[in-house]
Length: 233
Image (tube, rainbow, N blue to C red; front, side, top):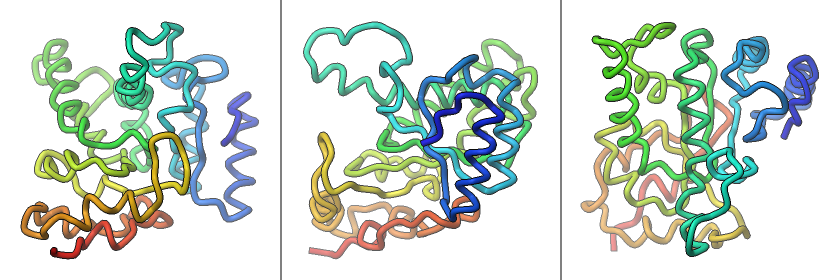
């Protein structure tokens, strides 16, 4: 993870990471100075795009789920349900600020935030845009906001069955199956793949069975083949 103490320092970090053979950069969820929609960051986005380094935002890399200072409301599980807001807020900020419009090859990965919520976000952001512009194309953008989420954003997930069920509402190539040996709420790689390995092939949408293991924008990332072709039981 780069500290992003300043744009110039972060650019040096990115260049050194590339030199060392790293394939992406973990970003802090909270910016060090102005937020990530500020034009001062444009040089950093241009650097990441030129170096072909995807930028990764983890759901737990922000101080609070929604980037604010509010404590969790009610039962602790309610806080768990809200942690995806961390990456949702960042994506909305980048899209609406025209970051992907100005840097069309910039790739952003949302880590461990699942993906089943994405189709609703695609609809909701376009609905809001139509309330502010008759054709839904906001100033500084050349297409509906949802199109940038489809073309520049990838999502990692563990056992998000809803994402597979809603593939017809998003691009299947945006999904990157991932797991960790040990973390809160995570199990072994084998356990994480179990929901898919147990399911009959006929119950999995055909598009889910053909999700590619690599995409042109993310040549260094892989999806475990066991999550692509579940065995029939």
